[in-house]
Image 1 (cartoon, rainbow, N blue to C red):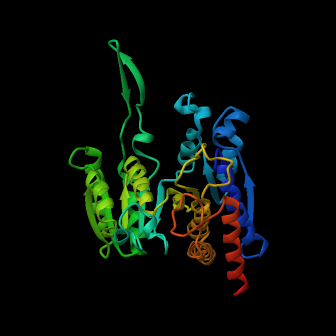
Image 2: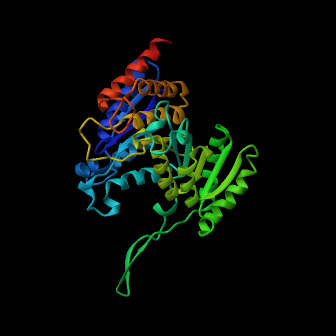
Image 3: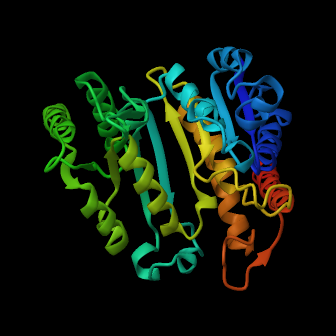
Length: 363
């Protein structure tokens, strides 16, 4: 049985890094390590230009039939004047909603030799291995009513923060399960001192915790969590939070690693179908210059192998190859490795594939 992957490159640097991930996937395919079928589709600004919509029906059909989606990036100034519902990002939001991809995993890991590339002191981030879990299909990004309205000659902007008990229960259970496979420490981040939604969140997490007696559950307000991530990030192992807080905190955590170009992510539904993408955006200012860091995208492929396909050995091969390339000092310009050898997107991908081949030959 083949694993069906839908590749959605999108816009900007998404095209370049999608090509890098495709080449790595084809390594596993051509060496008969994994049975993979890959289709490609349109999404984001490129889809708008060709079809008039950021998520064509054909792309959504392919997505629903796939086992997993590998996603590049969407957006750019070309489409900024469009209404929110018509912009490239709306295609990604609709994919998350249509596939019910509620559980977003965002690891922040500092690889060997990269601790001194962080803006924090080396001792604070050396060997950092943090997982942020973000609820992805509820909250302000999807709540109604929403919009800009006019009343009594005054404009109002309205967004609605809402969660129901079922949405909170399933992200709670997913986060406890992840914590069980790590160090059994889980920190739930909310704003329960101000928001009723957060109080419901906290109450339900407390209830679910009784089902996981070996996991240590703590609670923290989001403002304090942001401060603590900068002050002492290694106090955390798994952080779980709602949609908007997770969006902000995971980007903050990205910079603990030295570059946002190092961070992959996975968005999963109940059946483990997932969308896998780098945390960084489309970076149109450097698109086409062969300088974007492909590691986050390639690590997103590794997360696909691990979480959707349960192919842990293949995921470990990718992780080991990337660590080996970094240890050799090869990097793109966003990674300020001391005495590093700065190379381009294609060249760094070549190095990773060479290491993969070496691991395969040693079997």
